[in-house]
Amino acid sequence: MKMQMTANKLVLVSALFLTVFANVAFFRNLAGTFAGQPNAGLHVVAVAVVLLCALTLLLLLFSFRRTIKPALMLLFVISAVSAYFMDTYNVVIDSDMLMNAFATDAAETGDLLTPRFVMYLLLMGLVPSYLIWDIQIQSAAVGKAWLARLKLAGLALVTLIAIVLIFSSFFASFVREHKMLRYYANPLTPVYAVYKYSKRGISISPVEVESIGMDAHTPAADIDRELIIMVLGETARANRFSINGYERQTNPRLEAENVISFSLVHACGTSTSVSVPCMFDRENRADFTNAEAAATQNVLDVLEHAEVQVLWRDNNSNSKGVADRVVFEDFRSAENNPVCDVECRDVGMLSGLQEYIDKQTEGDIFIVLHQMGSHGPAYYKRYPDEFRVFTPTCDSNQLDGCSQEEISNAYDNTILYTDHFLGEVIDLLRTNDGRFETAMFYASDHGESLGEKGVYLHGLPYWMAPDTQTKVPMILWFGKNYHDASPQALREIRNTPLTHDFIFHTLLGMFEVTTTEYNQEKDLLHLSREHAGIAREY
Image 1: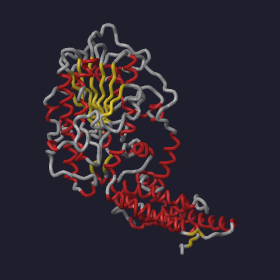
Image 2: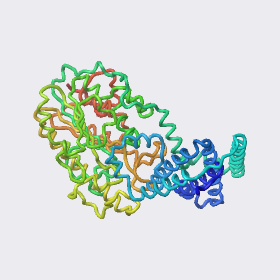
Image 3: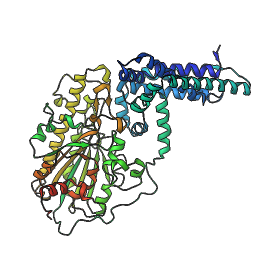
Image 4: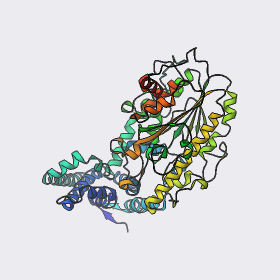
């Protein structure tokens, strides 16, 4: 015989379950923030009651006979998935995180799925959903049902207001000074994130794309051909590059080259789906939106307007729409990438690249190589065995089963492999010095948290993200015949605070492209020449 329950009772039981079991990260962060303060325990209980009341009010919105079961089942699954990521990695689920999740491919998704994830989904999502489905909701007259619903809503609202008033000074501090704590309220924040994401109305393939830089051209005085390779890094932290002062030698090859490493660069976002489009977009970070980027051409298009040959090779999930209108090659499978073991390696993107360069008999060439880089949590997959230099390593995607040292070692090995890859890119460019002005531009999309203060991975809202997620490496290298840049002058501005906003204009400057879209004040080459008092040459 099926269990019978009133709709109100089911709402209360569900709200209590979610408060207790789906908000471990919320209460852990809450307790950690207010630990040692007077009445800390009482304040945690007060917040718990307020959360219970808020969840009750939320669930009452769906507590109608035909909607209560499917709505609760969906909320339990959402809360289970959200709880796993918040409890395990201490991340928050906002609209940017959702966008990143929807842009993630199957391989990356597989790295995030662990036995613990299955346990969360089963015990907190599917089992409660099955029990809810099996419950028989007791019927009641429409008027009586509405009255009961209003009574419960009134009780929840009055209790919530009373608790806030009783502890008004605490809640004033909670709201004003600890906004980030509210992002851990589950499933309130994930539900709001879904709503906010749906309001964006992002179209992957917009009907009409605004053209920009149609006037782009190179001066007649520029008779030399440029060959520039941009390596688009993934999840690399600036402070893990020994070339930036890190105590471990993670950059032996770069340290042997005459590179310029900019030490104070902040990323446009904390996730690939935001940062990658933003890096190539004409808008500043403050004005950037994914919707605008999807409906507007980017610097790759401007370069093509200037008759530069553009090629994008990708060993990551995809270009996030940036390379939709240029030649794109997928190197995530052995079909194109000859260097594959547990996964296809970044260095495989160099295969056949010389042949491609040789076929381009006219014009400048711009090649983007989008790395898998240091993408977590399965850091141990991101490098071949010979680059397992720092040990012991975390050889699992379940980071909570590894020590801080093991996670850090595995991550540092990914940086060591990126260094090797960049060294190979430089070697390829050097072999073409006789025919081209060659250069390499490396920049990572965002950084990574490795357990500092209990936070892992990336994707926190920018305003609350630590420097480990926002400070990224950015490196330039120039061949012997590249005459429009002074490595010494660039080195003198290497400690200047910079952002991804400089990439769009620096690329135009490197190709000596003239267009109304170009802003010389955001061109690193121009800034270095201006700083050193060097006139531009053609």
